[in-house]
Length: 451
Ligand SMILES: Cc1cc2nc3c(=O)[nH]c(=O)nc-3n(C[C@H](O)[C@H](O)[C@H](O)COP(=O)(O)OP(=O)(O)OC[C@H]3O[C@@H](n4cnc5c(N)ncnc54)[C@H](O)[C@@H]3O)c2cc1C
Image (cartoon, rainbow, N blue to C red; front, side):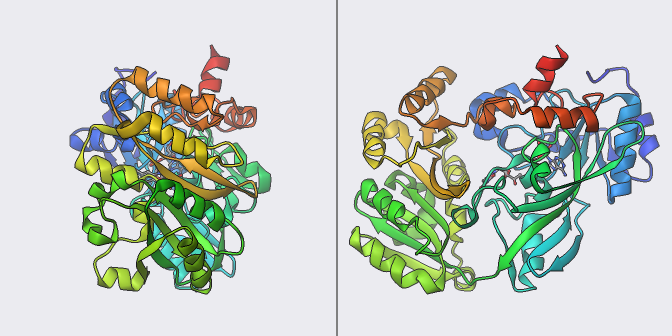
């Protein structure tokens, strides 16, 4: 779509005085994200590079960019921190990449809610709400780099999900302001269920400029590591700990194969033990310990965030969700990962059978969370990469056991997690992006309708 004859410097002049980049290494740098987690996407996306990067500072700037790309009919890919792992913010067809990280004001912190600009880094937002004695309901482990807009547009769940469910769950996100891409851009305010029209749409049907999120009273969470002799014991403990009687913010289990990637934890995660990482409310720590002891669990660490920092130790959430994969990849790039949701009720015997079947080809990692009011177990297994065919064979085995797979080796919303075309999101795209300029190639349903 992006015409090679376009004079990108002239287009940049139209955006003046906004900062723009039309040449040099930044073009490639700001066109990359964490899709290198997938050896398949790493190859597929390596030549996808923006022609121009722009850095708006305000919603008015965003509207000027939207009007400009509509006039020139060039693709526009919105970028937050660039930590997505499906190539969500890689410009498949070149064009303009809009870096949102200067739209970072925390507008208002009130009891129970915060209004914030979409480009704010989640870590900085968390600090701002902490100052009011409150916490975000959930965040990804990439909070230092990832933006809140990128999390809502590209993310699914995270640390906090065992308490509050997934992003899609009711009232976690209360409202958003969305800028349309047309000759005369408009601002549309979405609230309640309407948020789903834009949430997890990979920036294909509107530019989020502001968000209104629910907060909860802050707690001084205890970050713990508990060791188990068998992975089955670790899973049995986590299943029993998934109850409202134990107040948790995170519950993650990993097989002992992960221990070499966590060498900095030393004897807190030795090579011969399986580990459960958790964030536990101080008022539940006794119940948590009693339950883990019943499954042979031995605590090797229990500290609050301040003590961890003092001892130079990582928070539990850096040993959870896709940070586990990152630890492995930092040591050895032959690994990749898959993502599954287990059928309910969670079948531990099946997990033990799969572990036997795949042996050293897979190291198991499970996240215990809630979704739509029910406890749910997500698997993020680390997989030794050989060929694309093998990745899909493994996914078919998981599916044959009733697991839902979220393919991490594809770029479209539908082929990754969602599985079906979301007509409400497509309808909203007709309204907010009538020329189909936003992040083209990522919404398969739109392309199929256009064809
Ligand atoms: C180590 C690691 C751990 C992770 N853990 C989690 C996790 O726990 N949970 C989870 O859900 N994800 C996780 N992810 C994926 C990713 O980090 C999160 O989704 C993250 O929040 C994305 O934020 P970002 O600002 O980096 O977004 P980007 O990667 O920049 O963008 C993500 C998508 O959102 C779109 N977008 C960005 N900003 C806007 C905007 N203002 N308006 C419209 N569209 C926009 C982009 O076009 C893109 O499609 C993880 C990734 C890594 C590498």
